[in-house]
Length: 243
Image (cartoon, rainbow, N blue to C red):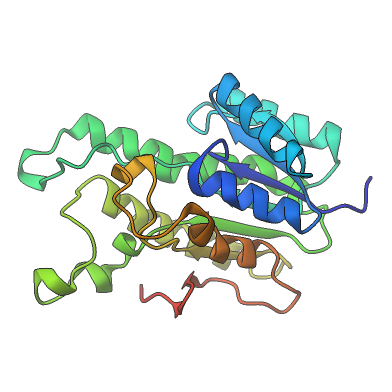
C-alpha cells in the first residue's frame, strides 16, 4: 500500500470537480477522476497528467449500483484504501423550477443524483475510507441549500432563483451529511459540506462570477483537514454557511 494520499472526486471531468482533482494533485495526492463519459474522463486524466498530477480514471455513474461497486473495486485494487472522498457530481434539472408547475420526474432525477447518489457512493467507499489513517468526506453543497439563505425577507437577500428540484436537493444533502456525522461520531472520519459560491460552469450557463478554481478551494481544504479538524460543518471561503 502506497504512502501517497488517495482521493476520489466524482464528476471530476470538468468544472469544479476537475479543479478539485487538480488542486489535490498539486499537493501530491493520487486522484481518481470519477466520471460517466469515457471520452471526457480520459481527456481530463490526460490533462491532469500533463500538469504533473498522478491521476487515474474511475468509470463512475453515481446513479448505478453496479458502476459504483466497480469503482470501489478499482480503487481497492489500485490503492487498497481511500483517504478522501469528494462527492461533487450533481445536476440541476434545468432552471424552470417553479413548484406549482414542477415536473415530478425532474425532481426525482435530481434527488437520485444529488442525494441518493452521494449515499450510494459514500457507502461503497466507506470500507476503503476506514483503512485510512485520516479519512475525509466532502459533500459539495450550495448556498441555495441553506434554509436561512432561502428565507430572506426579500428577493435581494434570498440566494438563488426559485428552484424546487435543485435547491431542496442540496438542503436534503446537508441533512443527510449530518446523519452520517452522527452515525460515525465514534470514528476518525471528518465529514463536511462545501459551498463553492456562484461559479461559472455549464450548470448555470457560465453566469457565475467565480472561477472553478476558486470554487474548488473550500473542498480542497476540507479534503485535507488535519486531525482534530471540524466535522459536521457547512463551509465556504468566508467561513461557516448557516444551515
